[in-house]
Image (cartoon, rainbow, N blue to C red; front, side, top):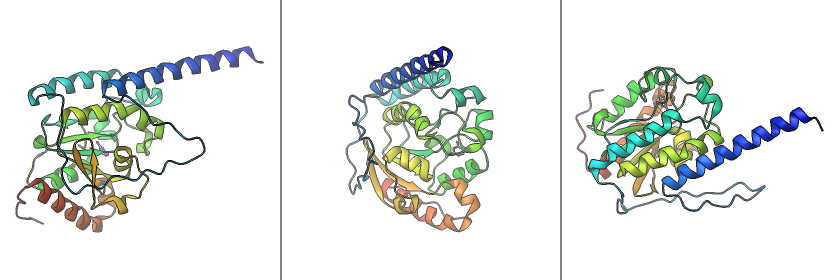
Length: 256
Ligand code: URA
């Protein structure tokens, strides 16, 4: 056997073992005590749970402590190198922004170039559209919380890889568990699939209610998709009306 290749394999194994250890610690800190067994050779068929009534919203933290807990997670994210390639290429991590006691979280996919440069989620063209979507239900960005599945920009804005989602799961699950929102609005396929652990197409997921932790979850199209397909804005508007009705928000007069 080629000794140098065996040595490289050992290094790789040690790195994977370290990454696995960090991931398990992160999941344990998020309160995840058991992991489902993966069946080799079979695709998981996960059916998201539709909900019709709000389950009780549970949080371990008093509202006043949520900001401090988020700050702890942010520090971990800033030092994270679980996805070595993404960590090496990033300018900044993009943790999330908004109110630590928000009733509604908007959950996106991953930072793009503008977000990588600024460290803030949804600040580019798609972000400006998201700001308008949020104001369509009478809220400002400061009144909600905006976060992404991935905290680092994938090269060329490609779709997050399953390993990358797994590496970030401990972070976004802990963010959501800390904020304990009543509602999570998943923006697009990646966010919906990551949160609900489903592979159903976004066109079938949107407009329905699901449960995640104590939150009610609604999926809708991603603002970037709307930039390419403006005719889908009507469906997003319908989804926002659903969200506003369930959250008891009064819709402002439409200015379009
Ligand atoms: N798209 C996303 O999904 N998130 C961002 O923060 C920016 C663009």
